[in-house]
Amino acid sequence: MKKLLIFVGLFFIFSVSYSQVFVNGININEQKSNYCIIKQSGFYRISVNYGQEKPNKKAEISDKSGKRISTKNIVTILNFMGQNGWILISCSLPDINSPMWVFRKKQIEK
Image 1 (cartoon, rainbow, N blue to C red):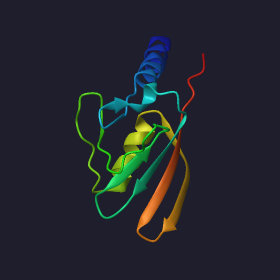
Image 2: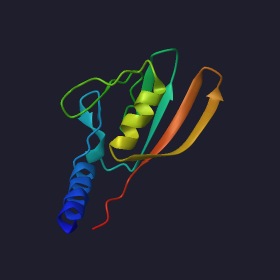
Image 3: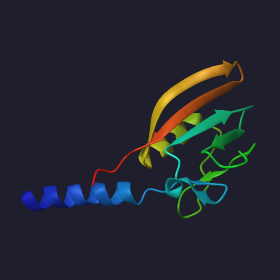
Image 4: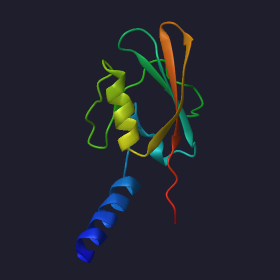
């Protein structure tokens, strides 16, 4: 039983430490920023601001294998971010057609 618990614990640590979210080909988990904002504009268009010099107007989110995450369903994006080391800390509706979500990067304890 101890071996199983150790294995599960190591698997969890390994999966969290290697989580990767790519926005237009850039791994935002490796960026210095601890926060990112995802804003939806229109039906399937999103923008992601993670502190880059020039925020993108249209973002493509993918995993480490390059598999694109669908923007047709925002819950898919929220689940993907949560599974990859980001915590949803705020959501707002600044404009009726433009909901916005603020995420914070999970801190891995050392």
